[in-house]
Length: 244
Image 1 (cartoon, rainbow, N blue to C red):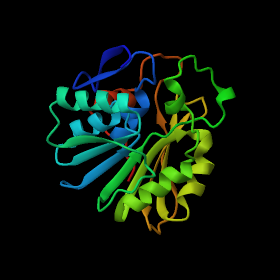
Image 2: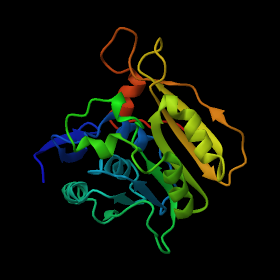
Image 3: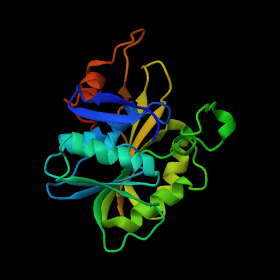
């Protein structure tokens, strides 16, 4: 395994060991975890959980739920396993090595969530570390396959939630359209005077309600490096990202 660092999320309540040279989990994982909601006792599954950042943040704030992370990279699975133990969440959180396209048997989840690879063209990025390729580049697994795998795993009327680039919203809606409805979108802007960089999207399997675009989440005040009060509360684990 490569060299690792020990980081802390949610104001220190989540301990995360992750690769020092590969993909580094951070803001997107925290926002994704903060956007989830479920009834007590329900199972939530994360596709491509990496070292477990979103998985652990979600489990920390949702003590009544169980979680499963699915990850193809064996090194990331090992880190996620260590992180689950370090955070004393082994009774509710587990990780499995595997591909999202692989059959899941009888497993069913109330919600599937993911932070998929963002970029389709490697020329759009400079990736000096080979470890970042799988986490950042979509490669052979298009977004529609992630959504399709979620649909197969979900219980009837189950929910899928994801965070992605804002300019991918058209692709997200197209991928959801065959099986999902009741779509809710929350744009995420770096500042009020800047275009959205990310979108959080949630949808229900077989949902019929019309598309809803919620007010945007602003991460920083104009001209300020610090987070807005709302974003700061979310990043510290003291507030949620309202999606419903």
